[in-house]
Length: 336
Image (cartoon, rainbow, N blue to C red; front, side):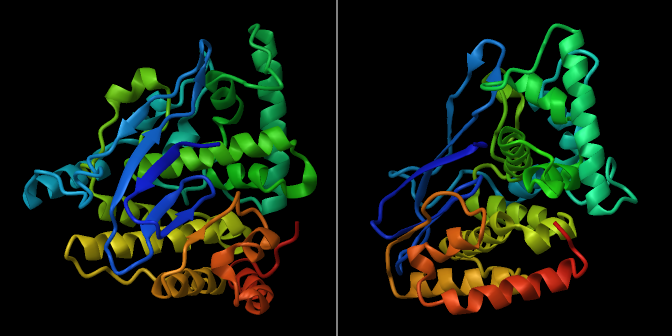
């Protein structure tokens, strides 16, 4: 599900932070050295199009160095802010008459409420359900009935394209128990695509790959920093209740710090206020310091998914309190 990262490392000591986008960093005194292949998993009407996009880092160039001046890099990264949200719509194709504008907006402004503005989370879910049901009918009316399995990208984007990030999370988290497993997975896919594009990782049909420009020019520290900034901007329901979010946020921060040190830079302080993120970060950091091999197994969708991870061993008795404190911090009145 999602875009995303297939990576190889030189060291036997690795973290694999999964859950949408996978972040990999070495767990040793050696700095980050990663070969990344970012692949699109989008499907079009002609079937699956998947083609790796090689990063500049590789076994022979594990320092993630690129031949570009600091001024040139800053100019390219500045261009990221100048891109309009509509730029990202080309990577989210829809059928005529449908739009993916709100999902595209979420790449640059994940906390911007458009569809969900002024609504409590329960109403967001109700309205998301209504929007999707209406789009199912619209798709059928144009002879593009939504297939139960292996829906092409155009169908998925047309189905969910009106939803902002907060509404996508309502679907992904099955708020109100109104959404199917397939719908939840598709919403998570779209959320992952947003994050991937925000980090300069291409995610979309391979036919549009050449239209994508990586503003970070393969610089991993810059990519991970963008991931932190993206995740810090999402809505409070996601921050307060998503285990996948907390795991991803802690993992991206660890990866950012490792990549910055590898580049000879002092990492900025991006420590989150979330008790759950702080706990996960602490567990990851301890595993790194003790040099243990820690690979995240499967997706992180609930507390049990965290408890079973080898890198979390010894922290289990603090998990429930951190979950409750995080929910109290962000969504004290939240109901499922």
